[in-house]
Image (cartoon, rainbow, N blue to C red; front, side, top):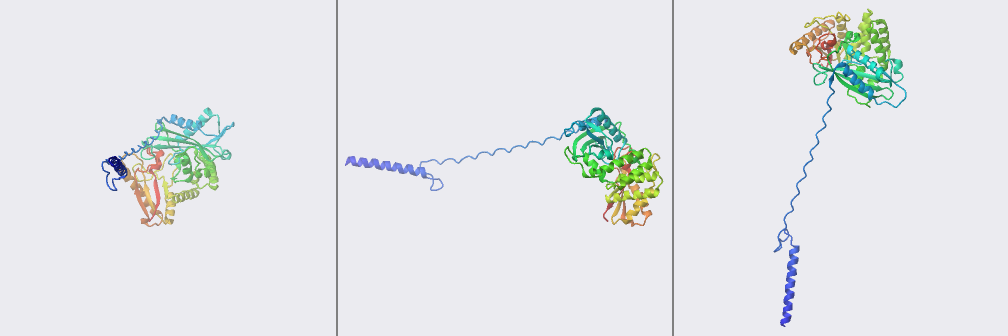
Length: 429
């Protein structure tokens, strides 16, 4: 009996141990509490969040090209343009024509742009035998050659086309008429020293400035574009007529006025002949040939084009610091009265109101310039109202001083005559 009770004692102890162990292994702190004699496990420590990646700074814009002496700048832009052109592989030479270079704001040709064109032609003949330089003419263009275009534009210290210009930006582009795309670009900046931006005879004598699609297409094909971009359609559509106009401009400069008039007449008859340069050419040659009726008609077409663009700038010349008109003894004697009559006739027909805006060259303090531009605008407004019966409330005068200078060289001569223009802007009543 003693032995039997010992065995049962061992069996009871073993069963109690098993029960205690099983309970400890199953107990959950949130469901019945902590098991007796068993420590609660520590809560897991959350991992620290990974630091956010620091964004890389944007790449710095490339530094603009340095400002070089004029001839060095022309050669730099030209060598980049001609030497890096992406051309189709060919054993033949590539036909190349140069469409005369222009100012990138006004569209005018000057002694400087002509000098650039001559320098480019010389460089092509001397250093680039892969190009076959041909005249800018209708027969040459019919073969779809490469066309070299370029703008020469005054820029300020921040290299923007506003305020007082301190340097010049040279932008060249090479356009392939076969593909309709640009195949090369060239850019450089030139100092003002030794640069003559006096307009050539045609642009010196031209009476007005209008935003013209032909000029806009030329400029936009050159500026703000990259290799592979399409040529601006307004330029492509008018390039054949542009060749005739270029020939007429040369004839006018050589005083061959009858020949120039014939060429401008031919350009006017073309589908793309509705251009400022065409109407200006018909006006100038008619004046030179004493055909005042034809001249008035051509000036009326200039006014019509300006009003279609909502903005017409006319080169009323005034005596220095005065409101009296002045005629340039070196240029064509312009009939201000005829201009006013043609403008007034069209203002009378307009449902819009017209703002007469006076401008001044950036010479001297801006305060007096502002006052003078206001006085000149008022003078033109009064002369306009005297020509035809117009409600005086329909025509307002405003002076803006030199804040909207297009040339900005501060020379106050024929080179920046457009800075002293009087504009007619159509506005709502």
